[in-house]
Image 1 (cartoon, rainbow, N blue to C red):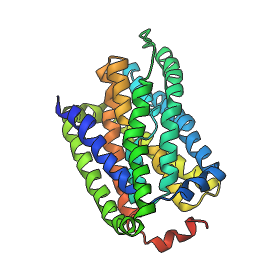
Image 2: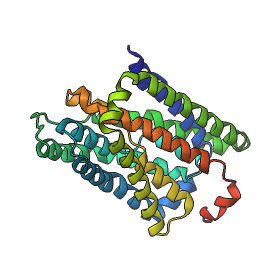
Image 3: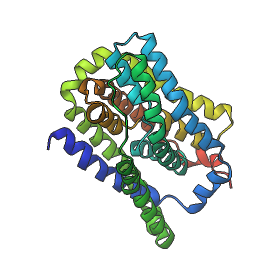
Image 4: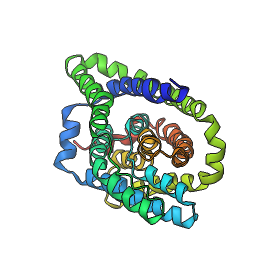
Length: 297
């Protein structure tokens, strides 16, 4: 097993599952029912992830006149909505964790339909049609959501219900642990993809940086335009700009059998950890009092 495989298949999933457990200890069922009763935030978040993100990616591929392989690689990334890393960043940024988890789970299921639809058109448009039928590993995708996100969060919520004092005491340590694991994951990603980083930044560095910044900006602006509270706006911002790089790599290398198409994901992974880290640094130090009005009774 290579270093990259150890990072993506063992270290990252295990670390995220532990963080999801801690995240669950900060949640109660009413956090989710409140969202479901007023689903506007979910609709805005999903629109950004599943519609605006691919459109922005497509326009950037045209604007930068990327070669067909890089253009398709950028679009693969743009069709893969945020994974569990976005939940981790949202927690440290003191965003709406329940909304972040709901968006991640919902988008991950819907992308089983949207990714083949969009990429089939993209492959034909950019002249790289390989006559490959794009079939995502549906069972693996659902299992990943369950094992890394749903089950750990559910266990954490049970702990919160039956051992509430312990759960409350663990909130700050788990936020610190989230930050530490985020840094370790970033270093692991850099180490595992070290040979790819130079060529990736040279070929699509600016395009992927703009994709990251524009999608985050779009997420925040749409959330505030529709008068969502600050915590929800933070969640949608993060969910819009933090993509599921692991899924993108699988599509490029395993389904389309083209390692070069994974280059934009390598570049984007660096940018999203940098911008995500900046958000965590700036928003994570905000006192809870500043966010109190963002939690409606």
